[in-house]
Amino acid sequence: KQEVTQIPAALSVPEGENLVLNCSFTDSAIYNLQWFRQDPGKGLTSLLLIQSSQREQTSGRLNASLDKSSGRSTLYIAASQPGDSATYLCAVEKAAGNKLTFGGGTRVLVKP
Amino acid sequence: EAQVTQNPRYLITVTGKKLTVTCSQNMNHEYMSWYRQDPGLGLRQIYYSMNVEVTDKGDVPEGYKVSRKEKRNFPLILESPSPNQTSLYFCASSPHTFTGELFFGEGSRLTVL
Image 1 (cartoon, each protein chain N blue to C red):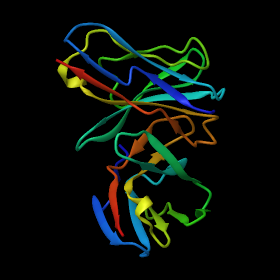
Image 2: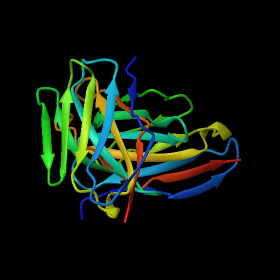
Image 3: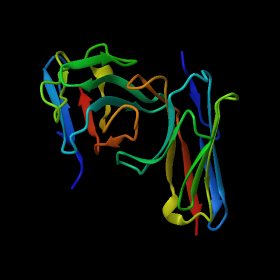
């Protein structure tokens, strides 16, 4: 059974510092991995999607890497801002259209 | 505006009273899915649908039913709700399974007394 872990569960950084968020998964036979952002009381917003054949994806200040062999993905957020404060979740899909397994999330606070 | 719409957003009900949470998307997406989010347990998949009339169980399907009669709608049915189904529910859709990017609704907070 796929297990997805995000450590730490919470993180606090001063504004301007780079954020590094970790996601690990136990079964490397994944179809894709997706990073989401969730604001309090809101739904999830997809940030980056990495297909299993890719090593990384970039969007603006966000960069996500994927190392399937070691079962890890890392989300980098450059030059953090208070508006980046949210919970970040990763999720892996085992096969196309199959079950999606989420990590528990990392709650991020960026202090002005 | 492209969106996934869930109703109701908030609901308090009593044990055993059947209820339906509706989900509708206006993006012509093939893939739709339901999740529940609970403190300490994270997001767990209840059911998913790869297209009209095609549904399958996720990790926690017990006590729930779904149907996909139209592409845009994917209702979640609780035939006989119980207190352990008190949770925050999310519906999501995706253009194709190989694209994978999920679009989420705003969530439905359900309390079963």
